[in-house]
Length: 87
Image 1: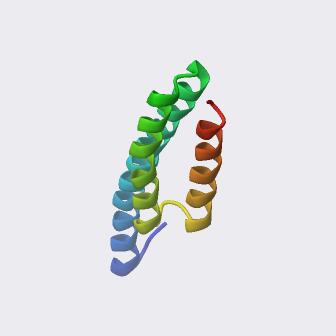
Image 2: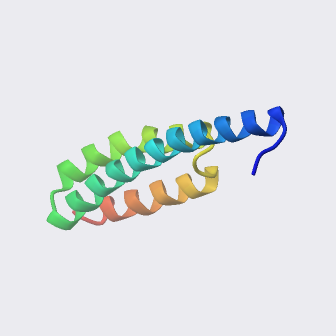
């Protein structure tokens, strides 16, 4: 357990950051799920639109430190390949 004032403050900050990061991760997963659902339904236009909306959200996650840059790039790359293969 945190004893010093510094470590108590750190614990409070970590709780707040954890909540923010959890919300951000959840939001990104929702965008990714929309792309997956559009791909599964076979609707290319909807899939392209969903991917276009998901991409900046994923990259925002990178700048905020939720995801690693390569992880986000890999996800975007694989999704775009799957959307392209729909035709």
